Amino acid sequence: MKYPPPYHQIQDRQKMISVIKEFPLGMLVTAFDGKPFVTHIPIIYNEKTGRLVAHIDKFNPQVESLQDGLEATVVFKGPDVYISPGVYTTKQLPTWNYIIVHITGTIRRINDHDDAKETMIAMTEFLEGDDPRFVLKKENTRMKRAVRYIQAFDIEITNWEGKFKLSQDKNEQDQMNAKQELIDASHSRYHDFIRDMYA
Image 1: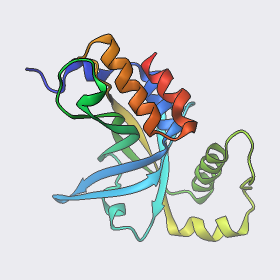
Image 2: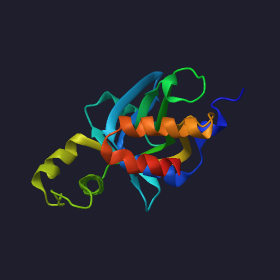
Image 3: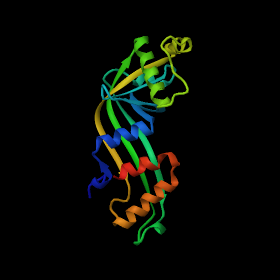
Image 4: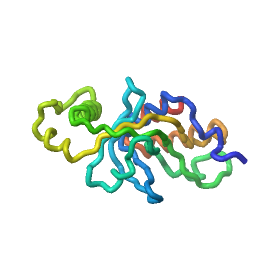
């Protein structure tokens, strides 16, 4: 049997980008000198370059693994839920459904302070959304001090993997029941997002 099952693997890149945008707190996974590192940080997708962009505290030991040309994986976790066999119309075992995207790529450090500031501004603009309560300006004195204590970087994407486990191996009614469980277990702001992922 092939693993992961092909019906759980999503090839639709736009759906994967939607997950990244809706759930930007990524899990950055790297390794250096045989030691693994994991940090949870906001990571945004740059539409113009097709790269992931982020910054990390310079005192975080993971920084030593963020070297030009080395590989990183970022995990973006969307909604998930336990699925009880009781929601199905057929006999099944308990399972867990989820929407997750794994991105693998090559690291490039951004060492110029002005370029690093631009990444901070872009991230703030994205996270503030369409009705911002705060606008980060380039001349912000706090950012001018803070930029010395961060390592900005981007990731050139080499592999996209959408892992959408949504009871695709069940009959249509059971799939719909599992979908409703995922919707019911999620914050209301994500209901339309989940429906779009099923479409």
